[in-house]
Image (cartoon, rainbow, N blue to C red; front, side):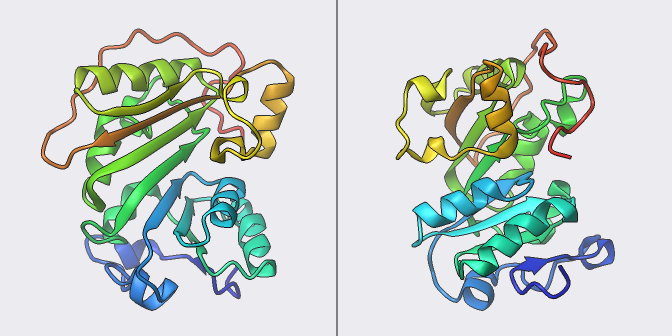
Length: 235
């Protein structure tokens, strides 16, 4: 991927306690337009980033993942299709405030993340991570969660409730509610596997305000029977 012009791979030294050289400059120097920038966190092979970019050509998309072998497929596809509105960054999500400036990102997609049942600090819709997103999100930015995990869906719903966050959409069975033209009909390889096993996909869309701290809900953990604990199944 060193030769891919649409992939950025900052090192730990590039980000540790300092700003990445493109922070605050992604529109001007990378996309060369003023269109909104939307992130997909834990993008895996980039299927959703690519799908979003195809359906919304006037919006910029950046897929984030730490595993280069995953990103490679999506990055190559974007290059082959001349998708100028799609980029990828290989980095840890915890480092994003060194990469993006305040208000630089308009929206976040989180697609089929590990629910991190025993560690709420690593949960991508947990209070700690949502607080960190505030450092680079625009005021009242949208968070989109698409998941096959009943636990993560219920947990995030409870977090929204106790923090009085504005919930815009709540779908507990996506494919009984939307048609193939809907943006939620974009499917990943692993999502297709789960759907064939009768496991439904769920969706939440909500806003987070930059003005308030986000509290952690007290949720009793129930393991998803179809998940192997501790394993990221996009490997």
